[in-house]
Length: 278
Image 1 (cartoon, rainbow, N blue to C red):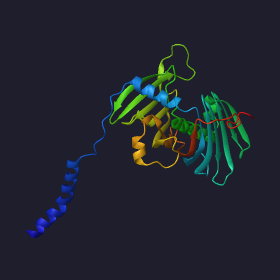
Image 2: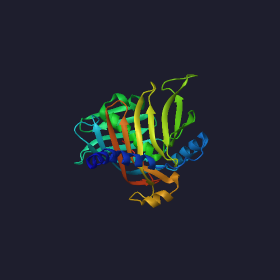
Image 3: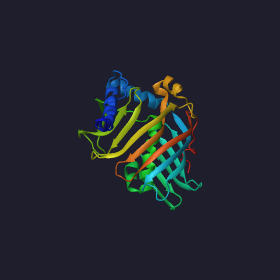
Image 4: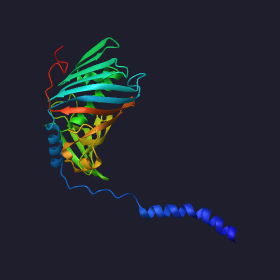
């Protein structure tokens, strides 16, 4: 009899623990605010307009075949509104890996180690190899830091409540389309309870996901260094920016995690800083 009770305790004990866990239930999630499409799109525009220029450092951890052999890249970034950007990437040993310059729809990609240079429309960038793809992903990461995911004038949006987040589906004209061509889904943005963008999907004209982007480590941009969790909690959500951004390539070619350091905003950025004086 005693032996039977012992086996019952051994067998039923874990079940009792599981039952106890189910009583506790999942961690309660904070309620979402009542917002509209107009409020979210206005918030995106405000975040975008707050930064006129930026410069600083970044490091990137690379997984997959985007950069053969290398798994880490150090770099510098310069940005000036409305759409001027320069990225320079270096190996951990200081060798210059690439220089990417963007101005509106034009780009120039220089690869010193290969002795090659490409330039043209950004629509053609995807055809220039893995380093070009890495440059494109890095550009999207910087756009997330800048807050440049605001809607363009011709774009429209639909708001969806998805579990504990808001999802904003953004529609625009398909690339190369004209006239009254139907609008297609080009981006999805997920907002948390503080109305911070924590995830983004970028879609191609064929509806396939080009990249999935996760935003993390939010802090006030002016701080730059370590910030206490209380300072982040007390900060206006409009001033918080993601200092760690992870990107999964939709084509399965790899992933990049970009971390920003020593970022300075709204300072003078020259044509030379942007690589436009060459």
